[in-house]
Image 1 (cartoon, helix red, strand yellow):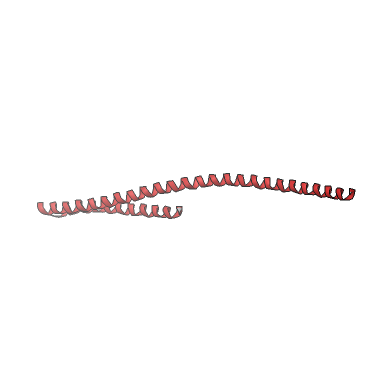
Image 2 (tube, one colour):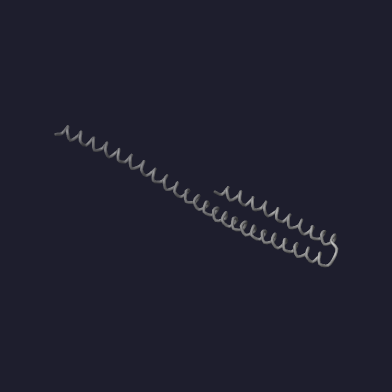
Length: 128
């Protein structure tokens, strides 16, 4: 699951880079168009179109950044959960080992008691 989010983060980073490149390209093109076109209205119209395109691209960039930050936050939460589960597993393994040791001791103790009782039964049978 963590790998999936890592891949999503990488994809968003790449998208972010592409959008930033596109934004720079459009900005450069806007300057070139402004210089190449003649007339006041042509420049104003060109500026409006370029400004609109810049706003669109910046909006996309903002949305991509929001998604990226959400993915980072979710990834952080998953890492914390994984760390907690690892700590719980260590505690569980310690308890399990302790219980296994206690069980082994109880089995030994029970075997000794059975042996003692068998000896007592044999002694009783011999006396009686």
